[in-house]
Image 1: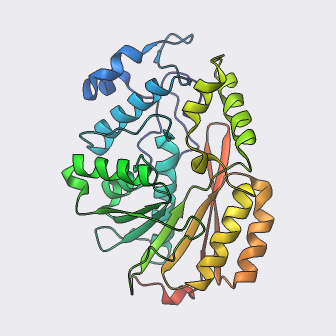
Image 2: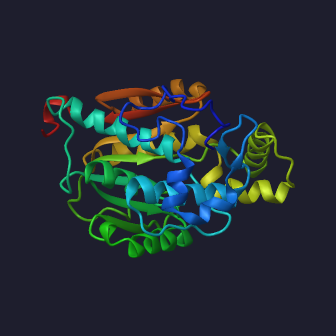
Length: 314
């Protein structure tokens, strides 16, 4: 979610310094970029323009306008009931990973197609590749276990010629695998990114989504809340975030050279000790934890590598 309407001209200081969304949205410019957004914009109780963030159509249209204004995306859409991501938070992940690459490149962020990124769980929205390519010119391979998500992401790529040579999507036929069955022989990525399912069950996911909606002052029916929340595989998996990341770490140790850096978001701080224990067991030689903040929401990236720092190419 984008959160409640902030004070006018209030800078979101928790976001990365290069994040294009550090200030409140200029809805006049957004409507100019995407006129369909206009019918969803209204005055908030603060007297400034905003949208109903509990309305999935409004949020989707806002995303479409943001992607058009800031990322030169001509056409963007996702199927009904699929997760509509908060773009400022997604952009933060990309910018912090750019900083991580710069840390072993004399402080210079490497740019261009020669930098390759593996997006595990690209989703129907294809947002990480859109942001990363626009900001740094990187090449992306997005994977997903959902054929509909892959179809949607490919439709976004086809509708935007600028993405066609720099973003590729692949269906993961084995839901238990992260890297196997996806990688081509000899393929190596500069880093991987992932936004794991947060919850441990469908019931927990429903409760969490309803809680967010109540916090936004919305009392819509349960079905509407679920429709806004996303697909099951986007929201929950057995064991939740902790088990998902544990399996990813184990599989990364089995193919330690396919990515120079592996990374994942960790939403629950309480999961960090188990993550560090898994990384130690897997034999990771470098581990970085990068704190992130968006409003009151705290999150972090955990990145790890199996190569000594001196072996990371400049």
